[in-house]
Figure 1 (tube, rainbow, N blue to C red):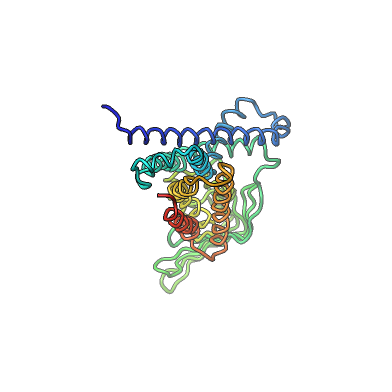
Figure 2 (tube, rainbow, N blue to C red; figure 1 turned 90 degrees about the vertical axis):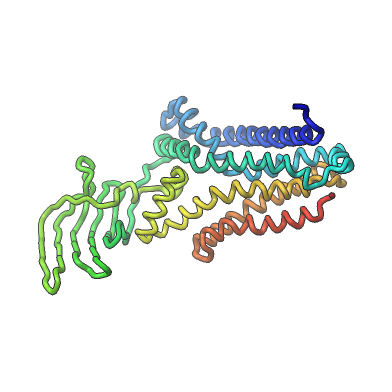
Length: 364
């Protein structure tokens, strides 16, 4: 089928958009890998990290993680760069002068932005979590100076409906805790309570071993007391949950992240906000592709004094402002000022308003 002038224009802009976008990603990632390798090479040599693991377990996982992290910036820079070149070469003026409306001009931009947003969403939720898991495991083996061992104090969690545990102290080095208790409730009424001196994870049985325990069962008006030296029990919590790093949620796919959020909400954990922020970011960042594309086209489609440099400078200022605003808003969520959903989407809402203003004043 013969292509009309408008379809040729769409193809021309889509190729320019995606070509510049992927070139910018490859260039920035190459620089990031060089700087990261130069910073960590001493640790790799000291820990005798094999070259195969460095390339395939770390850097092949590092690249998509880094690309998604700054994808809004790459999108914006790509739009600013090639559109400002078109404006500088009077291509935009020629297109608009031949009866193509500004709204019609935006169509190939939106097609490209849709492809990038879909690509970003699928990678963030289904591909990158698995590669991030490899990267974190590599860092534990060959980069970090110490294993992730530490003590937690005053652990108070609901591990399942009506079952609450308490630990005065838990040590991740030997997977043991002191001053342990379990409380079981039925319709809000306490029916059983266990107290013990200490608890330890038995890796051979995959169970918890409770030492010097004291159980009080409430049956109507009566109480039954049971004591013992040692008992094995299965709890809906494992040592991995105590030693999990904060950024481990980035290694969870869409299903795992939702299950983790549900369990953290049930336990009343303070970590649930971090998980919710991660979940909402995986949809808000791809959506920002459309907003930043509109801003980029509106800003760079006008031929101004100062040329491409002026456009790129303004574009970088706006894109870094977006990233900075995102960091600030998520900190407000962590402090409890905003809900995670509001905090993550506020930058998109504000920059959508900026995009609308710039669109209205863009040359038509």
